[in-house]
Length: 257
Image 1: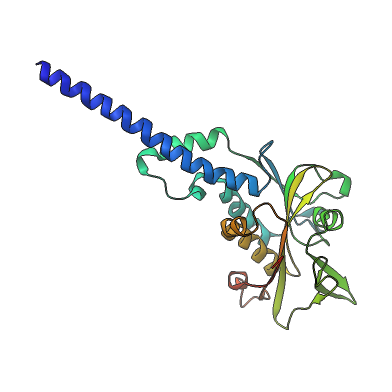
Image 2: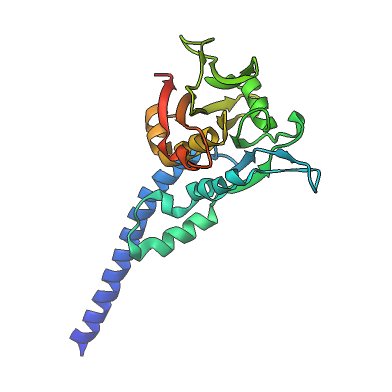
């Protein structure tokens, strides 16, 4: 009888040790990945992020403004960045524990159509989706943060202009049938926030830049750490015969190199 009770107690203690040691180890490893993610997107302080989407006129029958349907797919894509599944494979036994931990400290992500005026841009970390013509936040941060790349409209044609580095002042023009996108990480010194600009000359360029950020943030974090950076990408222009050319995007240039 005593041997039976001793076996039960031993098993209970072994299970407690297993759960404590395993849980603490997994929490430590996942916590490190989570910290890198939050730091990369500037969410170390208040855990707040605003995603500004393109806002285009919708004249009939509403005479209002709205987010293009093509961009709406990015809501779930960007939201997935901050789910526990992005932290890498988690042992099934501890998945519930990690999910609970993540929900307690999950960042506050808000998706908004572009404000109509620069003074309405909030002083929090942000991802700006879309070019300056239809996203006031993109136009605002392109002027105040000095990113590596900006979209420029001259002589009735869009192009990418380099603002910083040894190639500053040079212009990148898309070949026929191709779209260009830019992805910048920059800092708003005035408000001590982190800003990403994912924009394209066309919708495919914009989506390609946003997808590249989501798919490659770990590599970008490893390469640039806390530095500002900029990428210029190219992908097939959007046509009715090819709606997903953004999936074949290539990086043309990255700064700093």
